[in-house]
Amino acid sequence: LLFRSLKRNNLYHVVSTLCLVVTAYAVAISGVSLGLVFGVLGATCGNFLIYTFPGLLYIKLNHDPWYSWRKLYAYFAAVFGMAMMVIC
Picture 1 (tube, rainbow, N blue to C red):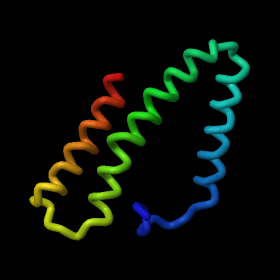
Picture 2 (cartoon, one colour; picture 1 turned 90 degrees about the vertical axis):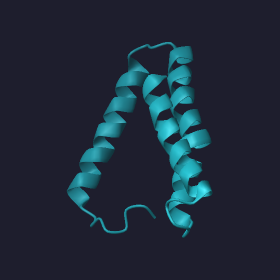
Picture 3 (cartoon, rainbow, N blue to C red; picture 1 turned 90 degrees about the horizontal axis):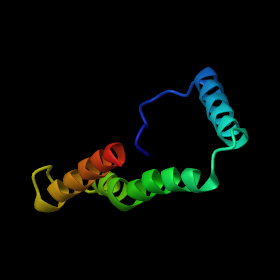
């Protein structure tokens, strides 16, 4: 939906999937407390689902000009969500 112009590359897909699996496995066997893992997951995914994702979807799917009030609010929500993800 967002990356229609990108061409698929199997090597990139395999390497990125392998990195994700290795990272998840390393966190799982490291003995990190489950509360810490859920806290980080909630801070990043919750923020993305509440602020960033709806704003980006509205920007992508709405055909109003970029300076309309609703689209400006969507830009603000997306930028605010990304900033809070970095800060939190």
